[in-house]
Length: 217
Image 1 (tube, rainbow, N blue to C red):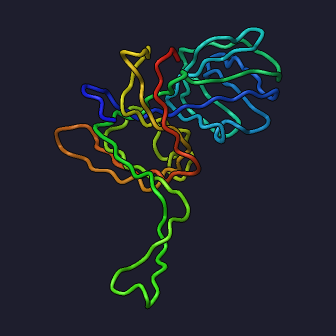
Image 2 (tube, rainbow, N blue to C red; image 1 turned 30 degrees about the vertical axis):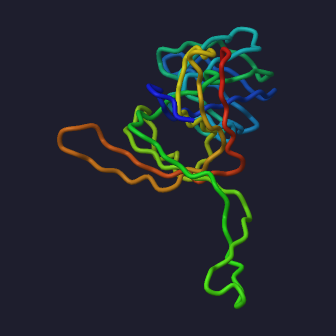
């Protein structure tokens, strides 16, 4: 389906619930969220994301990731936490994800791998068999996040919007593909008079599902 006037975009999203999360008030240093199970990277969090914390005694709020390892999220110095011992908590991005890269365009392929099964008796035409499904995408734009190098080789949870809507409805739908993708090459170009341009590829890792959303996130 072609949607005239639609606004596309690429959004990374993440959600994580664990009983191994603690909150540290850093005093003069930045506050941190720790996870003894080291699940933050696998959950899909990246630097620059706004995350909403819930199911805690004292830290149900929205904060921003300034630095990240598998077991420690460091927040912006303007974010303030209350000390809380290890326990259960949920960390999520916005329901539609976080746009960390300003994209001018994206394109992709959702298809199947074709294997040549041509025999002599098929001459003069080749024959093929459809086998494993496969998808990939290429993005072009510029960085909004302060982080980039740790994206390389990472699997991120992505929503590839053909049409974005902050408040979807029947007359203003959000249309997107969603799936996990592994970030490949990240080449850069640095023009003299513009933002640092960026293009990179994502290799699909599993199902790419299309969604036509007409209700609230």
